[in-house]
Image (tube, rainbow, N blue to C red):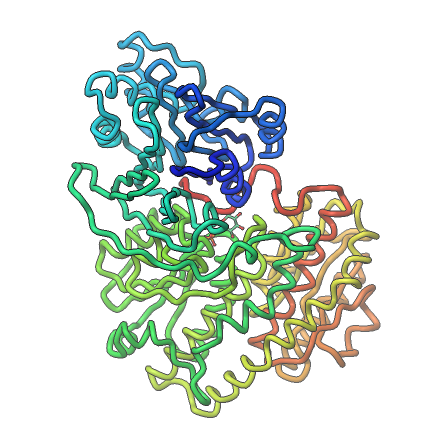
Length: 616
Ligand code: G6P
């Protein structure tokens, strides 16, 4: 949450900052602001509450004459509401320095007393302005931005990425990270800072991930990294594997629509290089050592939101193939329950961004206890994969819409691959089952494409249902987490009440919710591969239909058993039961998108949310 950008170079500074902010807006859009050194050598700020477009309007009305040093911020409000005054950047040293922040400074009340004692009056309600004021005091005392910055960051508790610039040191931006993301973009005669590589990918694909508790100093020609004590730190650069175009909307109406359409590729790219004949081989896991994987007696998947539902789907497959108990825990619950861990426990974290603070903290908790950790992540060189013992990247490409779609499908794919790899290494998976799963994988991208083609039918349904106030979702086995995901998508982007239930749980309470006309999506298991579950779900459909529900059944092609009881039927391609979730979820994604559109809402940037949640 909160996107930060820094620029040092000879080119259009405001342009570079705005381009970065546009690409980082998914991280928060309560307010936005930029600070630059202007032609007169002063720090000039423009900031405004609301989305970036409002800041752009302000800049058009009141342009900045920048000279090559700047910082920019897009905010997800924590301390202080989303007002113009609370928007970043904040100023210090009598307006000579500007500072932006992603995170929360927990000891800000105590620090504010120091600021008050120095006779400085704060204008905003933010923790960030306190830091800007403190930095101003230190710069005035030491006469040097870097020394002052180090002194200040050492005093801060909580989480932060901070960027600062000072009038007296033109061409320089300093940055620090503590439990919040920070990357550097290496350009030709210009350098960048950002919350992630999207901030500068349109200018350079050469990047450096700044490690925890480090300070980065960029000028147009140089990049340095030190620790908080000021000692130099060596760093390695990496190449961003996608280009700016991949993170552009192209001709699509929304990023979410584009990303739903990209799902066949997300699956194909995540599988690529990991199928070896009739078996799955993940080199990153081989490096971890087969002995380690053979020894595992329990797996805990930790994740939040959509990623946790991917984890729930994955748990069924991993248990089936690797015959090891798997449980899924929400990251923010995990470490507070004093979990029972041993050196035979394996933690698999699932996170699109690789920066979700709750998940990062849970992973760190496990690492401190000597537990082996694998990260399933979609973002190259993000903090969680770097901290983990092994990283199994999903290759879904950059996901920009706040509501996750292609990353979800890629996460399930990666978890399945991990299950098959584990099953092989542990000797619990027959060659026949392995070959069958591999064949399913090979056919999967094309089937996902067919599921994507349900769009038109689902769009019509959603537009008829634009006034719906509540939708329920039912699923069994791997269909259960998909029911939860279908409901989450609706809550996230259409702001309507939605609940997912295990179909078998219906009679234990939720059936009381069924009233005349209540829409219920039912994910129907295959009658070919899961005949028992299929007949049970058909009975559930009859039960709710008898009570007036409007049933929308998602069935595999050729399943006619449901037809007499369903008001609408959405057909997906035939596959093995375990692979059904990857197809069933697609019409539910379309439904949420189209209902949100029918209600005139912003599909990509739903209210109150942000994509990368870097606060606990
Ligand atoms: C936020 C987003 C969700 C996402 C979750 C986990 O809550 O709004 O869409 O599923 O974070 O994100 P991660 O990056 O860890 O997968």
